[in-house]
Image (cartoon, rainbow, N blue to C red):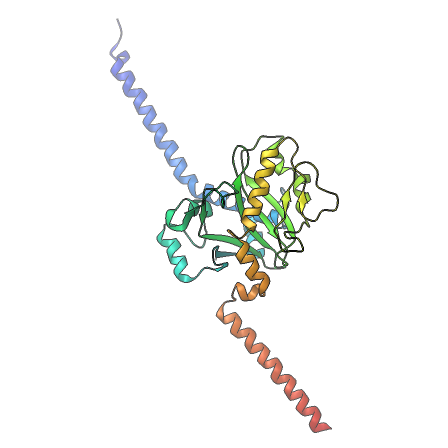
Length: 301
């Protein structure tokens, strides 16, 4: 005869209690780790920005957060107009539920107020929607510009960065930090040997046409614009070529790059008022000193 402790109801109570306890533990762990996970995700993004700009090598032990703060200046830009965002536009981003200081471009592209649908002819990168604003990254030391890029390959959307020298014409580096392409085929976008092929390539030809591309097979020796295609991964190669051409083209960063080429980068990415005033004051002082020197020389003569 079974004891009272073996009844089905008591067994269920014990099982449910265990489930509740485990659920509380798991939920508590998830909440406590949420901030750490967000920080790790942000630092992974920062690391990939530094790697694209050739400022960091994987596994070299650098403090990514510190290196990013010391070497990089993020700037939020208006893609359509090719300029820095205004205070009113920052408020627009905030009103849509995003943080303009730590901008989530992926989420922005899915927010109707901050993006627009692309038609088939425009959408060579197969991204469907284009965000109104994007965050770019300036290297403080040498003027290198790092641009976020993404687009569809064979099986997935590839997310990455392309870095350009201060001339905005020469590639410093390219890398992807998220994709689901086939390992050993399209996944070779992560191969250091293939990524090294991008360094030193030029965006435009002598006529000013955007011609940087991934070709099928091997690039012509000495070509300034062509990158070897990935062996056995024609569609991924084509996808990379399309997304690079889209983001460097007139529908994305093209206008910003043109504006930055037309003027000094400091004028396009306006210095804060206090810095500008300080520079103007220093120039005036230098001019006054030069005038005084000339006057003293004339009096001595």
